[in-house]
Image (cartoon, rainbow, N blue to C red):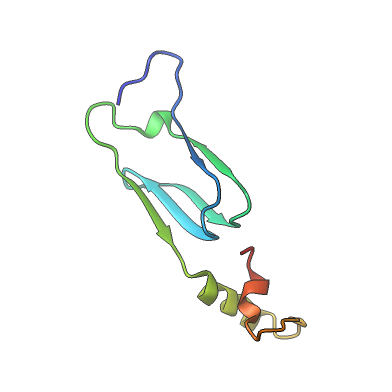
Length: 92
């Protein structure tokens, strides 16, 4: 991908589902833990000028990460009507 002088390449993520690691061409460019925060990443200097670029997004289980946080805070009063306290521990 070639850019005209002065141009930038920016990736926009408007709601990656909570826990995500984003890689471009094998390098981590973003790690998220809140799906309600939009993210913008300037990747101008990370693009392969000649050839293909590979974007990978790995999503970690919000359910499992949430339960881990619940276990890390045993004294917290997780008030939940449906029994699934894991959602209260993450921004989901």
